Amino acid sequence: MEKAKGMPKSAPNVETLFKELVDLEVRTSTDTAVKDLTKDKSKDMYKNMEDIRNFEESAKRYFAAGEIPGFVHLYAGEEAIATGVCAHLSDDDYITSTHRGHGHCVAKGGNLKGMMAEIFGKATGLGKGKGGSMHIADIDKGILGANGMVGGGFGIATGAAMRNKYKKNGKVVVCFFGDGAANEGIFHECLNMASIWNLPIVFVNENNFYAEATPQWYSSSSQTIAERAVAYNMPGVRVNGKDIVAVYETAGEAIERARKGEGPTLIECVTYRNYGHFEGDEQKYKASSGEEKEWADVDPLDVFRDYVIESDLLTEEELDDLREESKRDVEEAVKYAKESPEPQPEALHEDVFAD
Ligand SMILES: Cc1ncc(C[n+]2csc(CCOP(=O)(O)OP(=O)(O)O)c2C)c(N)n1
Ligand SMILES: [Mg+2]
Image (cartoon, rainbow, N blue to C red; front, side):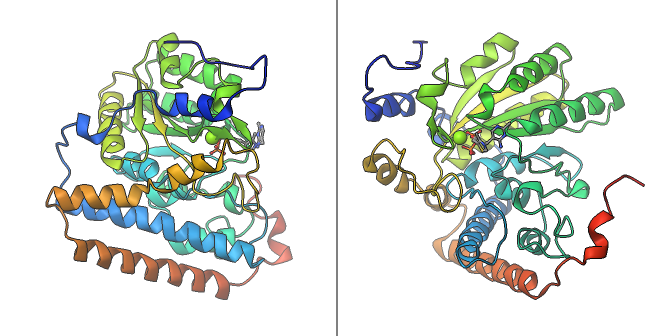
């Protein structure tokens, strides 16, 4: 594959560089035969994507209103990845998440009320209101934690996979990470170790083409993230991350491979975030207004709606009902969070050390 442009010698045509990367080949649902997408599974997946979207839209609204402390990095636009991957996992399997972690946690079964209360900083939150958005975790659901450190999940995920292999417990680990994290040293160390030890792990890259304001064409020596898998002797697949059916199929193969003891896989999901890096980001670094407009038309929820209607899996009415149900669930979570008490000062030193 042609080498990426890297640091340009003269002023780059940013729009062209961006487009070049976006236009590289990806796997889509038309390339795949979906084996086990039942009506019930489709309902669960659509409801889950709606839950993530509604959760994020609420987080956006209440952050702007000053009711959510700290920072929030929204997952809106990337729903198909977390949902399509986690649809293959049970509570016994593990995930590690990122600073953009709400979607991963919802998809892995994180309780909406407990999550919302956590980002509101309330005592009823999953972390008793002490962690907030970037530290949501729920060990009982296999959520090993969102992470404020870019690349922080690699070591945790690889360690958990090492333990799973040692214990022969059949559990799989999924490590979500961004395009920026793929340029951290620990990415290379962990893919290497996962490969030599043949660990039950899937590395799921969410390539939204930006790490904060830094575009991928500028910061990556390889054009794709998936092609780096060759260096670590594992399969590398680049898939359309806006197309949940393609993500679901690709992740299903990788997770099955990991469960059978055949080792790790690297999946690159091509996507784009609906909003700024964090809430309040003016996004002046974006290649052009055209770039944002083009991607705004690609809504993963609509892509899935079209697919299930065309495949006679769900009707428009059923989809609308699920959308309404999700809105109600998220509204209830907001109400719960707002009405919950603040953590008390006495609780500050609790939960610091393991008992
Ligand atoms: C080790 C480390 N370096 C830098 C930062 C600051 N930082 C926070 S998010 C981010 C960009 C991450 O980009 P990417 O991995 O592509 O994830 P995305 O935000 O696009 O989902 C950076 C540089 C950090 N939190 N941790
Ligand atoms: Mg990114």
